[in-house]
Image (cartoon, rainbow, N blue to C red; front, top):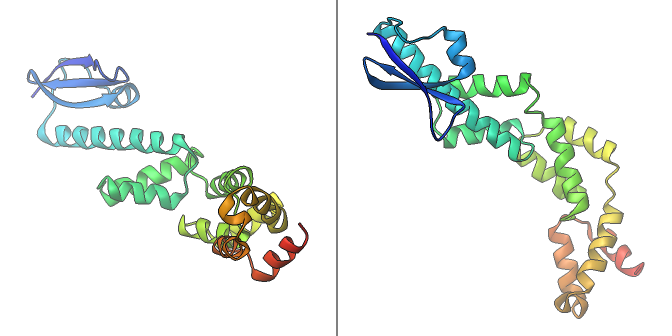
Amino acid sequence: MKITAIKAQVKNPERLSVYVDEKFAFSLNYMQLLDEKLHAGLNIDEARLATLKHLSDFGKAYERALMFAMIRPRSVQEMHDYARRKKWAPEDAEAIVDKLLAKKYLDDRRFARAWIENRALGKKTSQRKLRLELKQKGVSESIITEVLQQANYSDTVALKQLIVKKRKLVRYAQDEQKLVQYLARLGFGFDDIKNALQDE
């Protein structure tokens, strides 16, 4: 078997289509092509072709993982879940996660910081609920505690801001019990809610 042509793809110019015996066989990115020292006219056997096809699949999976990690910070568990949904081979998924960790594209600490900052700026909630959300994303208890302390996230401040915001809505302005239930669902303690309402 012989590599007969290598062409840049039209839809994805970052990838190159490799043709073996005049037929499309697989695609690689430029770095993979250079690493494998492939060129037109090179003879390859079945074993090498199988290895290159696997390398192609791995490269595409890694690019997808990278895009997934670029949309917003991700936890390591989120990336593992993504790999499972995409049905990647477990050893490939592990290698991709390791690569992303080494390059600092995955970092549970940074993920937890971003999650807490997002909550502080937007959809406010209690520390208790924040802890639960981060645990569900696979972040360790020690990282959650450390990042919450560094962020100086205050339940009291979040609670007061939520009350002010929700009081503008008719259903909460006229029904204190509904407001208390809503705040309790966000993980705030009843005593804290009572005190915050009294301080209005």
